Image (cartoon, rainbow over all chains, first blue to last red; front, side, top):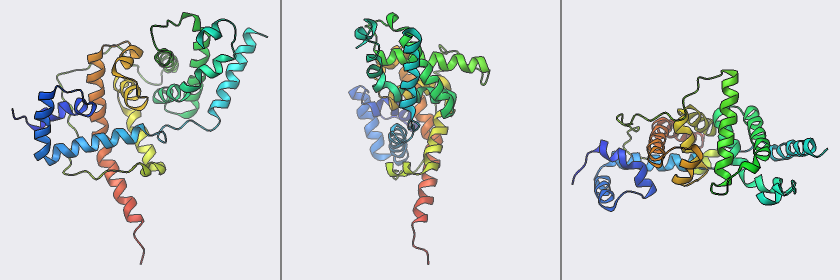
Length: 81
Length: 197
C-alpha cells in the first residue's frame, strides 16, 4: 500500500511512540525512506519533543523546595499547635 | 509513606512529596504562566493534598492524584480572577480536522546545548503555554513528566483514545510553531561564533 504525505502526518505521533501496528509502520517507513519532507517533519517533531522535555526548560525557581516545605510546616502547626 | 502520614507521622509527608515537586510546579506554571503564581498554586496543591490525604485511594497513583488537585487549584484561581475564559475539560477534540506540520526539506538536529540560551527556553515555554488547555495538559503529562498513556488518561479523567488524539495534535502544533523558529535561532547562534575579521 502506498500512502501520501498527509496520511503519514496522521501517524507521526504513534510512529514516534512505536505503537503503530506492524503493517502500518512498514507502510509509513517506506514513505519516509523516499520522502525528505516527511522525514524532516518526523525528525523535527522528535527533536522538538526532546528539547521541551529537557529539565532546563521548566526549571524550579531557586528556593522553591525550601519555601514549599516551610509552607507545609505552617500547615502542620495549624493542626498540631 | 501515605499510611504513616495518616497514622500521625505527619513529618513523613515532606519525604512523600519530594519526588513530585517539579511535576506539580510545571503543571501549575502551564496554567498560571508566571513563576510566582505557579509556585503559589503548587504550594496550595500540596497543602490541599495533605488535608485530603485520607480520601486518596490506593488504586490510583499518588502522582496522578496530585496532578488532578493541581489542575483543579489552578483552574479555580484563574476562574476566580477571570484572567482567561476556561475551556471545558471534557471538550472533545474535533477529529475531522487534521493538523498540518511545518514543512521543511531537511532538519539539522538542534542540540540540547541550545537550551543554555534564555531566548530558546522562552521560545519553548511560550509555545507550550499557547497550546489550547486540553492539548497542553496531555503533552506535559506524557512528554515532559513521562506518564504513560494510561496514567495520563487517569490523571485527566479522559479516555485513552482522547489522550492519543490530543497528544498527536499537541506534538504537531508544537512542531509547527517551534521547528521554523528554532531553526532560525540555531542559524543565528552559529553565525555569532564565526570569527570576526
